Length: 320
Figure (cartoon, rainbow, N blue to C red):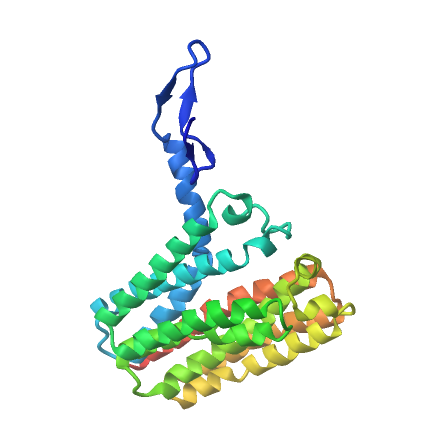
């Protein structure tokens, strides 16, 4: 009986019709590339890149005038592995739910291109390697911040998605910890008020960001069993109120950064202007609660974060 390649989901032998004999053939470059692409997709690379940007910002702001580029490199490598591993484990946990949603049904696990066992091993290996790397190369505080991040993301936030509509607020905690990982890798537990200010910005930012996504895919989420606020908000009033309230909180957030000494008045003013633009988009959704307006909120959120963190970084380095 011919052996099957369980990873690729296809036969690893070729039957020759003329003789009925079989010959071994190696994986083609195309098949290997597709397999690599599937595993790479499980790591959620776009989310990882954004997270690592805030990790780097947290490190550079925490390190002050004399950053150690070796520690920054170690922090990014370790945090990147942890983030990738957490994403893989998230895919693993949600594979059955993903199979019921149009936007996720073609992912590697629902389609069987990657088996649950393979994903579990891959995710555990990445997470374990990342945590071990951080423990060996950065201050213990940085390692602990990363450990708390992946633990709350995989074991707390992910299961809560099908339990309560408040899961977004819980998930904003691990989502806001990446700059804290960077800060702690730079200076341990010292001056944590600066790291807390960065955490606060990212925590609040996530709420309107994910509300916009949840509104656009509310039917898909509800049908799959996710308990999201927009799923039970047929008029969109509660969703809009949450968006407006949280974006309003972002307007003065730069003052918190200025008060802790992380940034200055320039970044505080710039952050306020970026927050006002974000707020304007949220108010637009409140007036006209449509998918198009929600997408505008999402785009504003994707603009806000790099602009604000970029302003804080520029302000801090000019001050030095």
